[in-house]
Image (cartoon, rainbow, N blue to C red):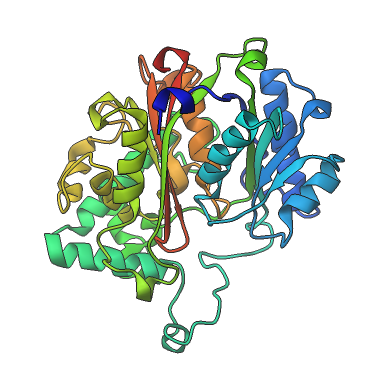
Amino acid sequence: MNNEFRHGRAALVGVAESDLGQVGEGFSAMDLMAQGVYRALEDCGISIKDVDGLFCATSQSRLAGLALAEYLNLPQAYLDSSSTGGSSFMGHLVRAEAAIAAGLCNVAVVAYGSTQRSQGRNNTSKPEWNPYETPFKPFLPPTAYALAAARHMHQFGTTREQLAEVAVAARKWAQLNPKAAQREDLSISDVLQSKMISYPLTIRDCCLVSDGGGALVLTTPSRARHCKKPAVYLLGSGHCTTHHTISSMPDLVTTGAQISGAKAFSQSGLTTSEVDVVGVYDAFTINTILFLEDLGFCKKGEGGDFVSNGNIAPGGTLPVNTNGGGLSYCHPGMYGIFLLIEAVRQLRGECEQRQINHANVALVHGNGGVLSSQHTVLLGGSATL
């Protein structure tokens, strides 16, 4: 496929979060979606009346696209509400770009919203009945990720201290982000001594449970030139689904990120050495280690060493999850859209204390299900086209 044809077909021009944390009674997922949409439109200076494409997903609405179209009063908007869990929004970004290039819409929004904290959910999501897993009463999703973590420790000698390094690095980034939910000091000892959830993962190895939402705005390159802020472009993408349930995962220590990342890099013509800032879906500390390995930033089995000694924290050699990640910033259940929001802000130079100097290329990696659906995208400013 011709890279020149793919690049620059649509521009990412607006991003925003909704209110985060615990928004309180009376708010719905659609309220937070719409709040994010209006804020993202304000970010780029486009009117809701000009939106003719809606891409969204949430676990709290069976027909999310229909609900959002009704809420925003956009009855003729092109709709896509397909869901692959937390990686949904990388797929929406890719399909929104394709829809704009094909003339199916001219201004597309990608949106998410969730009130899982206000509705009283704990660290688990309600699992579907599975005859191969449910009789064993797994505590999902932590049990699934704990399996991967335990296997990585057994196979490669990864330690609990190395897992804790991921949480500590995320917290140090969160301390530079005024919007982050958790900004208190966190040490490796704090992580290890916190409540055990599913061995070897403690509560500090697990993501936050919060309310929140957000949105992205894409439009044509010609219209992007008249928006408030510099445009960001999709340079490459790749997706891979290896399984649905964790008992069917082909290899607990190798994810589909190996394939999705290779596709994204091939399509973009870039290498890991050209990536300035990284966002990976850190629902659990083992995720960051697995994805950095599978995306090619270090060799398989060396992720524990790679994240040690502050290497992915502020001042390290690879900036990872600069907003504080799902571990310390927010995690309303399907976290992928927040990775995209942070990447755009880094590429536009808007991140103040946590800003990475000369950030030109961002890698964003989404994870859906229980290490099931992997979607990698590479983003860059106009100079990278």
